[in-house]
Length: 251
Ligand SMILES: C[S@@+](CC[C@H](N)C(=O)[O-])C[C@H]1O[C@@H](n2cnc3c(N)ncnc32)[C@H](O)[C@@H]1O
Image (cartoon, rainbow, N blue to C red; front, side):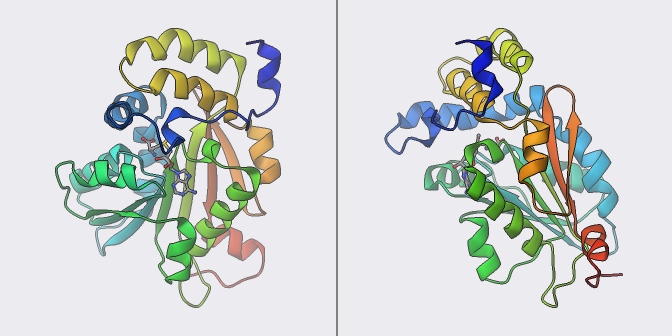
């Protein structure tokens, strides 16, 4: 593969885990290894401390939605950290793939964490709302049109029934670059055998967005932050975004 091919998103590449006919044992090992991969590369401890924890108070329960939860390791970590810090956080973790939900739901239960097979749009139609909306390694799975849909759904889910909102959405994903590709191939992929992590990780990087691409595709009100190593955070602060547009924001 030439480095030049990383200049554009390669949406023609599909990941092994997205194949409905993929080897189920390999898929389960992939879900099982996501937690270790995420601890190495995804930086959710920092995202929790910098973005999520400041939104939590001990006065009331909070609701968090994780979209594209896979095996559920990120919502489990968030539940653990929030409980450690004395917050009541009720987490709904959704995935489009029934196999992911079956795997996640079969793991030891965590208080306040529920898994369900759903798309973000299903929750919008059902009138749900959340204080926090998150995803990890979801965005690169999506087409540009699907990305917009997920972002608009995230906005809607951060609002209450009157259209007011004070919630925060944080979507975290890999940032496409030749260095990220080389670092993953040499430093991460060899650590994970017997799963799809090596192949899908490299394909994920080729499918992922650069920060300027995300900024160009995101609707108004969204901001892109970059985090080392090779991460994009796409953030929507409903209170700020709504007050910028003149719409009423929750006090
Ligand atoms: C690479 S996995 C990441 C799993 C998990 N978030 C993690 O980081 O360990 C991406 C997950 O997103 C799910 N997914 C893809 N498109 C989706 C969509 N439109 N809505 C919900 N889930 C989706 C896939 O089924 C897959 O389980």
